[in-house]
Image (tube, rainbow, N blue to C red):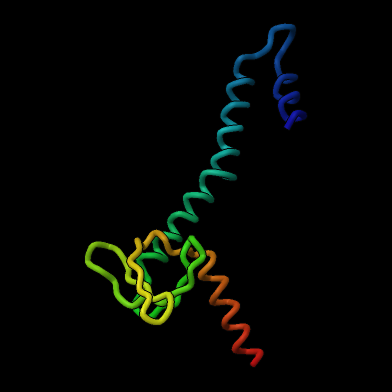
Length: 116
């Protein structure tokens, strides 16, 4: 990055630095931050929201707190009733379901059933 900054600074003519170079450098930095930080985070948030909205009764899930459970009811107020163990049902928000942990759990389960 330092070499890129020096390149922008050397593009000026004569003794006076060109103010356009610093503007271009700032625009380039904002573009880099957008494409490498903001955009991927927005994409993950969209995928997480779609995943939590597409869950159905009977799905086995993992919550963000690390609880494994099975969805037994989708309530009208946007919450879920999740069975953690026999006779243990908890009510939680849909946003508490972890996409990454649930995907890893499902991948592990499918690998275990193929090996058996």
